Image 1 (cartoon, rainbow, N blue to C red):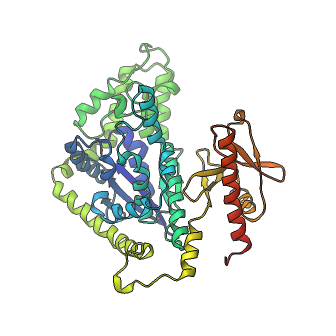
Image 2 (cartoon, rainbow, N blue to C red):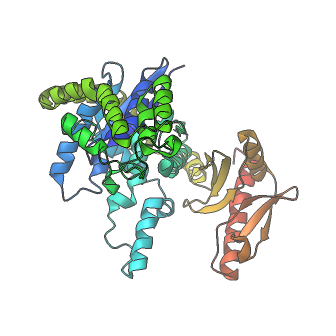
Length: 461
């Protein structure tokens, strides 16, 4: 069975050594595995959210990032490699998904909430400086993924929520329009991926200005950065604590097991930091020199990169265009001669499709949970964590098929109410603003559960 894996790269900067070890190298290696249909795209629409006043940066970054991935070994003949902005079906799908996405779901997005919290702390309007791009970013990300029905999406932990939202949006669209149009994507967290320390020991990041260049500036820039790595005051001849050394962590990320063991032994036997930095320089140069040469050659021929990206866009659109045509038909954007009056029964079924629903997801710990969402997308219940998805599914089915007890909780419990099955608390309502709000939320939840129960008892209704 072929597994489609999709990876997006935001074009808002120049790749550094940490990007290569943590994302580029493992992604390229994964794309070379049998049974993998890999999609890689330059997320240049996403870049506009934070770089609206610096178009030159976006343009330069698109070139640098494309050249970096190709120089690092990405094979455009084996994978689908394209720019987001070359696929007009992406913004079209984004709008179709926007029209079925509850605003309440976007209100819960971490990036938006963080911006609101910062504004509140400053004493300004909560939405000050927040664009619709930032607010609806998760819908565009969902369109990127769902357009190609990716099975797996490798992301960092900070993106898990966005994958859950993509699943919620896909389920809602499928439910409303009565077919399995979208595959529900699975999040992939690569725990073994290296997170490299920067020059000061913190995570290597442009935000901290502590990066080691990958290709830019050549050998001289690489060496200059390595020589600025912070070390302790132990002199040559004094044993070093290799395990807690940033130098050793960096060395290990690019060395074989045997080389790493030898380097560690040398440090513990008193190798000077200057000699250790020199050894790291030589190792890194040996690892990136050939790639840097290919990078320089690609950067000198942007037209070659353009041809590769446009060929990738053509390949991607052969899948995207017919799929969006099917979605347009599903939502009613059809040729006039194909339109027919909707039957009353079909209208009734569609109305039911917009009712309350359960959605399942995996949380940041990898546990399985489910939510009960109201017709407008508001969360009414969120389950406890289950280690086995079958257990979560069994409880969810019981909530849909038999009467459920709801019990009020005090504020100290951190939730407004709880659903109880066989004496066990299985799902909690969201925090409330007081007794009146608590009772109203419980009544709303009971109504939703009763609607699901009625549908389960009489599917033809």
